[in-house]
Image (cartoon, rainbow, N blue to C red):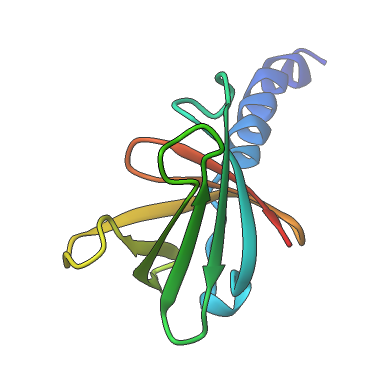
Length: 128
């Protein structure tokens, strides 16, 4: 009985770590289509800042982004970025026109929701 009691914390740690393990993308077909980027946060469990952005992952490796800001000078901002999936990780252009890429790991994913951990932020998306 003592053995089982000693192993219980180890098993709990194992399941906690495996629950937070990154999801490996097989290829870009898993993310193709339109996604609503509805929030961003510095920490996964931290305070989420609401945003209104649409990401459209195209088959040709283009990520079309459309940001909506109802209180800004420009009500809508559009940009096209290049992206690809490599070693299970999404790589997307940091800035349009520059060949610098940012790695984004998929932290959680089901059919209609996805959480990405990029260089500085977590992005929370819902499939359209």
